[in-house]
Image (tube, rainbow, N blue to C red):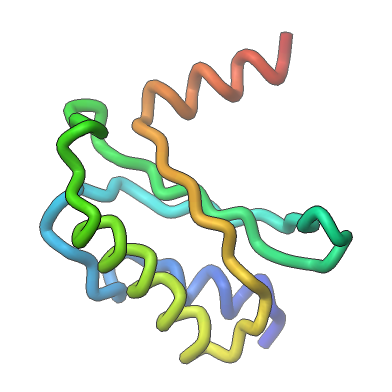
Amino acid sequence: MTVAERVRKALDIKRLSLPESPHVLRIVAEDYANAAGDDALRIVVVLANDTDMSRLSGDDVLSLKSAIRESLQSKGVALFPYIFFATEDELKERESGEEG
């Protein structure tokens, strides 16, 4: 199984033990290189548009990040995951800004 296949399986939200809050719509992963040029993963956790980012608790964010890291490790993915959060609308805005 390739690294990409292991990442895809590890980040399947139907299989992940995610906290109830925030509501995760999907998780997107792409190849990434850190500041030192080392291979890594850039992971974007896509949240529902009605998510109030200012109300997310540190415990919820920590639980979510831990679930992602543990799942990647359990699938044998050794790349460090840089995890970011965005609502669906924020992600669309970023993508349209990159195109223009």
